[in-house]
Length: 488
Ligand code: MN
Image 1 (tube, rainbow, N blue to C red):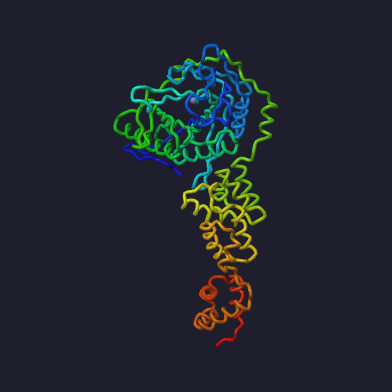
Image 2 (image 1 turned 90 degrees about the vertical axis):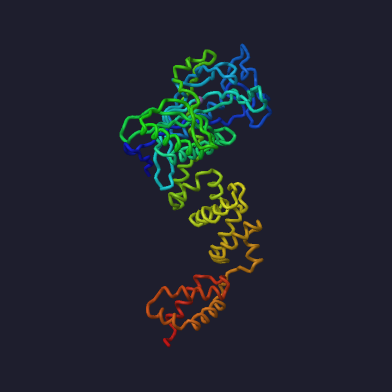
């Protein structure tokens, strides 16, 4: 699926690379023991190290290192057994040390890859350039007082992973799919909670445009986008802005821009700095981080099943389509729900009910799967009632609706409403005889070879039995009677 922007000088292609800052799931910060919980009162989670008091020394949090390595392995990436923490020098009021401890020339994780699942069923691979660990800065609060800015250092020193993709994406849709897939992998791994609205995953978007086949042109960077939808909107806007600039004889300058979600546009923030502006140098307070291969192997051995593997399993072992499998594994909670429904039952039927009736209901009520009014167990019971012929698939749809409304279990609803399927051949036979008697013309057509007309008879019988007759039994009886009964 190609995304091109038409211009006077020909079509333009968009080139996108993403840098994602993902907060590491860890009770303590990267270089101190201070807590990291979201929503604490300002400056309640600040150690002397985080406040950069003179003489304080950082001490690496081993759990954060494990989380970063685990993430690297989950991204099929090379792990660098030796990596180095460096100081990245800034002056910001909310960065008391005057530098951020980050990794630069030697990051802990090297090249890897992420496979996207696009709506058209294609699965392009996006390269990962690197993943490094770094500390977060504090936060300046400009909206608390008309004249003064306050500083909250709770985030100062919180452990981040900066995950840098290669410039492999070519459309807003691919960028959106990349962010969703990356978030899904991080959540499966348990290394980042992926809550963009709480700021635990933020994204810097690099965008340039070119005529297909050209070398890369100047890119701009849109900072700190905090939702998938905004990232896609920002790319769309920014790509069109750059095309417009080139087509009207202007140029694109390398700069950092901000996305204004209300106006749906980007605007300049500052001219782009280069790496050498930061005067990176190895932090003399920290030794190089040296990992043993055994340590990495132990983490690899404990990786959970990730979305791609789970998708393969659903396709190979359960016979699901690539699309259904992709939809079911995208969120870990959805996959777990599906597996509870499918356990000991037909997986395809379970997948149809989860992606069909259940997803439809959740969308309509704007609920997450964890808030589903129908539990996995009761949906499973509904499938059992279909499988043992207590109800037909058609009646099951009504039962499902009643489950959503009342929260009752399906067996109770079937009994209460008298929906039990009629499998008693005697009762069905009476309705079949009536239908045949009522339709001599249709019977003649059937006998003349018009197979489709059987549907009319089935409809009559279903109407007479309020939809409760077993459809297989009805079909069988109708055929036998129509084929064998004497011609008029
Ligand atoms: Mn960074």
